[in-house]
Length: 270
Image 1 (tube, rainbow, N blue to C red):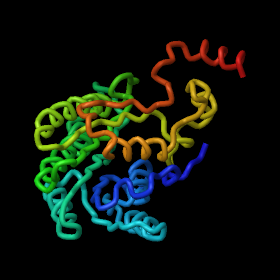
Image 2: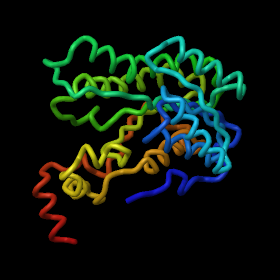
Image 3: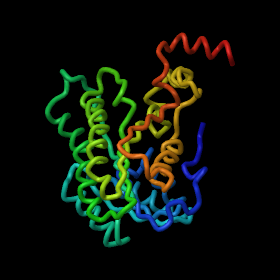
């Protein structure tokens, strides 16, 4: 199922807001950036690849939105600080921060080296803290931080260490930030996507693509539009009493105990 991330956008819901979306040159981040722009926000697209980032910002402007691209490597604390400063210089403040940038290594705990640990921790974890640290200085009452984690924070598989450990850590960071920033009128929540249709998904799944769809109760994988819709809601005025939460968005996949039994059940009722 393919759906444009701007489908279902609530007109003017994020008018006058300024949103930074890290890791938004492709995939989920790109979808989230387009959704916020479609709902009226001025969006700062950021990532390491200038060509991709400029293309995303250009697409948003062609769709009638406001966007600019700022190149930043989330492993570099100075570039993170400069990203926030550039946003404030351009738009005057920060209202929404979506910490989405992420990497992974296909290593077990025994195979992983210090360099693997540092690579993932600095990108997927430390940058979330640093982006929040600098952004909150320019957030007013009603600000929102959304941390993009994964269903691996709950259920995981071998060979994805330290990615899976860090994703669980993001949920803990969200709780800590929610407690500290709540009195300032800033909400902090985690989004935990499952299988999402992005550029590399079909290639990764290969012959298991259809099987993977069948073990989702909704009968399909998610799309960036699904995640973008949740992000736009959690940053809206309708969610100002939601903070410190980690929200699974996985089409019910985490509720399936026996994959083959579930496939048989689907065959019987379809």
